[in-house]
Length: 158
Image 1: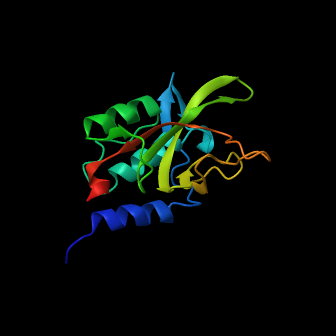
Image 2: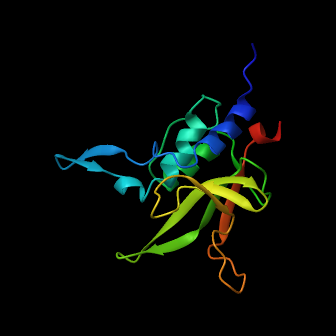
């Protein structure tokens, strides 16, 4: 038997749609148990890093709950910034302002093809979903959210 890591990687992306597996991570903060992903509202980096670390493909060293640590770990493991939208690449979208705090935050997910991505973005579903690479366009066809960076890895090129 020969395992097929790349095929497994893409199957994991497809099979993650709708999964609540990436919704909660608990930590003790000031003596209290807290869900640091806010029941899925801030779980995009945990989703991406969980997929990357799952089968020890050497794509990442550990799981992360923040994008800054995720991107640093990815770069240390051979991910490079690119302008190519290849399947399986990791995409970071432009910052968004969240309500009601009015704080900005990045968002991360995977590219499935030239026009489709998967990320944990839907505030109602709070689970990974397939969506347009620029999320939902407005009636004039403008992108709702632009792409900030794309990262590829030699694993995806093989």
